[in-house]
Length: 78
Image (cartoon, rainbow, N blue to C red; front, side, top):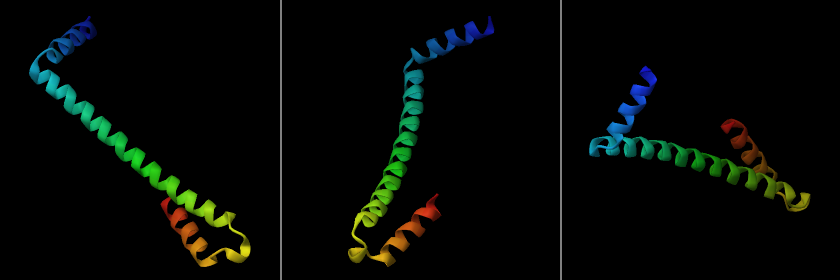
């Protein structure tokens, strides 16, 4: 019964301007956190792409120092 009343109270609060603003703030915070997570994933993907690109080069054209740096940077970020 208490859960039902709490749900009704939440709905009534959301129907007010203050409740709508509070709900929007929560949604914006959640979306901002998701954007940060996406940015971090995109950075990791770019790092992996750099490593794979370097590995796909023929051995004679490969920059072993650059590859070692990329791998070390990636390992430290894991």
